[in-house]
Image 1 (tube, one colour):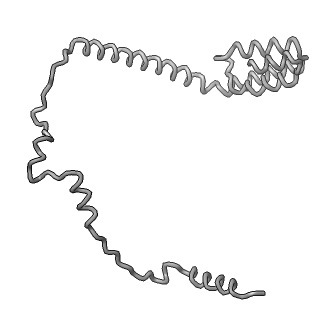
Image 2 (cartoon, rainbow, N blue to C red; image 1 turned 90 degrees about the vertical axis):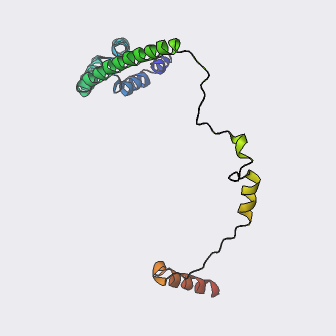
Length: 168
């Protein structure tokens, strides 16, 4: 709407009208009455009977377009508000529970002390792990690929290579 106001201040009536027409498809009259009121005031001040009729025609078509969607929108908003209230209640309840819980030094009885492992036989240091990886050798086997895999590609490749070798 600010852009429409700017165009109106610059005296670009047709461009302002085009902006209102474009924006009208996104503004259902039930939810954006201020937009439709501003457009109506604009048409009364700068338009004629035909442009006012066109505005009302567009308003009726947008109302019909959003007629089946508006109850869904209001239902979704009310459902979202209810969910927000439920979530706020849960958050408040959790905060109250956290306020009553006192923090103590908890000890995990199953905790493994890594310092004790260094002397045992099962312990492998990072350096030993890296060194053992260096000594491993991988054997790669080469296999021939059946000609059926390539289809006609090898013959086409030979033809292209033959064409490169010939000089004109």
